[in-house]
Image (cartoon, rainbow over all chains, first blue to last red):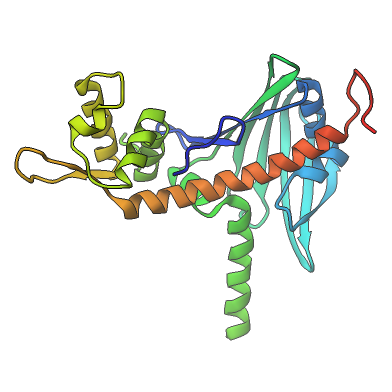
Length: 161
Length: 113
């Protein structure tokens, strides 16, 4: 059974629009959680899969600013970029997100920071794409492992031919 | 516009009572009455929840006499829950690293050692 514990990450998939909502609570005030999202050094320490290192290439975290980061494992590199549309301290980040391996695809992400009693924070992150097929594909594969496994499969095809 | 199958399953499982019903059906078929017994809700409400699960393809009901037991479509359930769970687990792992980062950041009340 996949019933998520309250403290653990919860996933909801919207039936009306191609959107995924991720909710998680943290034992830290929202100012800190916000800072861990906008400070490139801190962001690089937690974002991305465990076995990939994140390297920040560009980071201008303000309305109209943009970012680009690369995740590496050995010689494999995966680039991601986007634009910050709204950066409201301790409350909200609105940004776009594109994986460079799929340049036609773009997700619109909203990250909300909600204060909870006891100096805790609820983080609500939504990701909207432009088709149910894209949304379900990335949920089905897990966006990150899907990307990696896709490349591994491509490698296998290329070495076999 | 009708939502796609995955969305239907996701929203069917978004409800705690329906998740609970599915968990019980995982150990065997049950009638509507049996399913309703542990809950403080009307039989009508349980039937409504079952209809949502049925429309999502998660459960089916046989025409077996009067009982018409509810049966969990285990394959559909496992495929969907595997997808959701893997995705959820990746997010959870990311946020556990964020927990670590937050613990290492200086708080207003004092600094961690």
